[in-house]
Image (tube, rainbow, N blue to C red; front, side, top):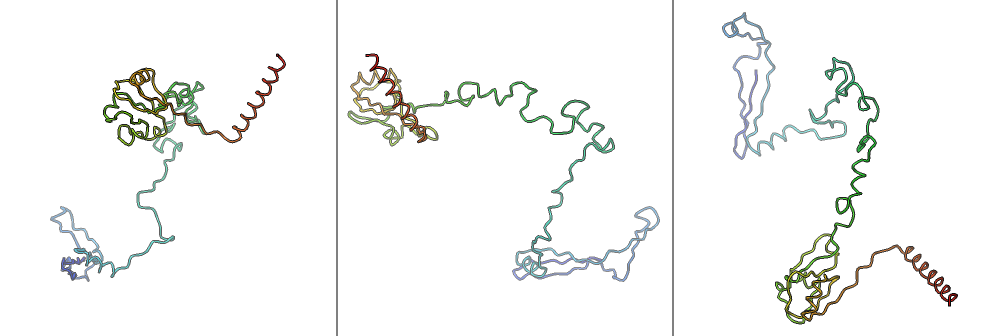
Length: 262
């Protein structure tokens, strides 16, 4: 015999207990009729009575949870989810294990032997790929040949900025007007003026470098050109000290040689 408990959707949840069968609980055995099975009736043992609770609202769920306290997690009752842990496949345990006689490793060769096998990137003794790539030129080889060294800006873009006579053009002024927007590595690079286009106004241009064509056009238009010094590369203090000592030593040596020659 089984029973079902239903909870209503009302704010005050009510429990409704419905018996699943009207047979008396005193009977322990039941029989399937012969007309259904086509064979003789088989005696079956009746299951123990049980109750099924169906939650129909949040309030009813809260009441049901209060009625049956839930066990809290602790170190002694933690266990992995069912089906999340599987035993590893045991290879090399005979043909009856299901992987065949050689277990998918073949019959001969280094990869069929026991032990570590072949390391990653090994190509049989020839120069591996991870050692061949750095010998290429440009970005593919990891060198700085293909990386940009300046932020380019053409003369034709000066007209878009609306510059007038006597104004100054620099990396900061171009950023403020939105004509260039360097990002990432380019934010630390200097400005370089290229000669694509023409200029009809006299400007004061400060940049890290000028192309030959741009320099000719700007000088012909009467612009003032200022080449900014390059950013000094950071060097360790010990290296700078040794360089100074070496320069002083060779300066004295060359001075003494000039004095003896005269």
